[in-house]
Image 1 (spheres, rainbow, N blue to C red):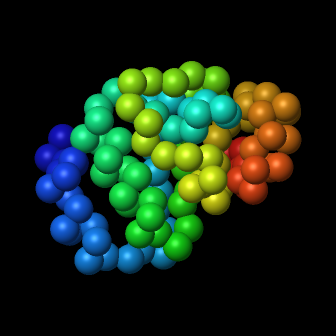
Image 2 (cartoon, rainbow, N blue to C red):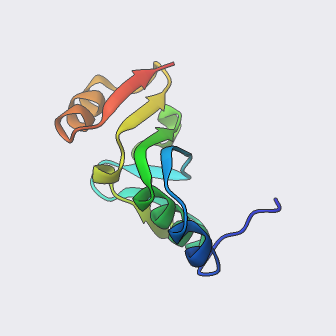
Length: 105
C-alpha cells in the first residue's frame, strides 16, 4: 500500500497540523470506539487524530457494532461520521449525544 505506519511516523506527524483528517476504520463500537487489525496502523491513526483540527470518520454502517484487535481511537476524537442511510436511528442518537455529527451520504 506504500503507507508508513507505526512508531516511525511519530516524528513526521508531530511536525504537522492538518485542518481536517479524513479517517477510515475497520470496526466501530459505540462502547469501545475505533479499532483495526494492525497495531502499527492503530498507533498511526491515534496520532493523526491528535494533529487534526477536525476528524471526519468515513465508515459505512456495517462497521458499526463491531470491534477488532487494536484500538485506534475514541469516539470523543471524532467530530463527524459520514456513513450510509442504513445506520440505526438509536446509533445516530447515541453518537449525537457524544458530540459526533452524523452525516448520511
